[in-house]
Length: 270
Image 1 (spheres, helix red, strand yellow):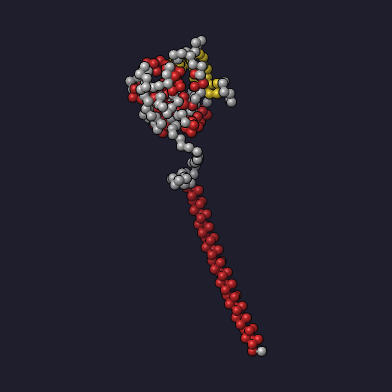
Image 2 (cartoon, one colour):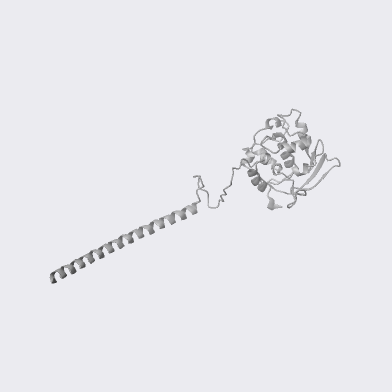
């Protein structure tokens, strides 16, 4: 019995020793794993920090952007930044925040208009002529100062191009008596377009074939925003003359040079 007790005691001690070894080994392995995890976490943190410093990769696998670049995700594509063909809502959201029109709606009013790039305006008694006094010393981001020539160019360009993708049909209805462009209506001539929008010094003059009660409201539409004519011509847009107007009729300007390189009035300057 004594021998059996001694053997049992010895076996128990041996098992205990084995358990201690296993526990120690397990603890050591766990410690190494914890160390490796810490190293991995450190590497991930360093990688994340480097990524933040260099920029964030755009969704969909696009190229990295600079750390000073604001990336905005929108619900739809932006087809154009050219006011002369802006008719969709998504493009309009951006064009409206970049460019300015002659007039805009006053506050939340649906009927009252106020000047933006125009300071005063008056119409004749029969509603066939409107004269606009333009705001002075308004610079574009190009550095050019807005003049009446810019407004004249803007509206004549809209009447000349007047594509189906634009909202220029309703300004054409007011100024030419038809929503069509010269490709679809052969009664439209350069003389009619030129006479419809003229500069009298620095006063912009619109001449309508007949009264249009909605005309002033149409000028508040962001598709009628004033562009920098000098900049537009320099980058390859229509040159604004009667010699070349036919070449620009109905031309798709969605991806135009102006859409790729827009220049708007610098609002903070005035």
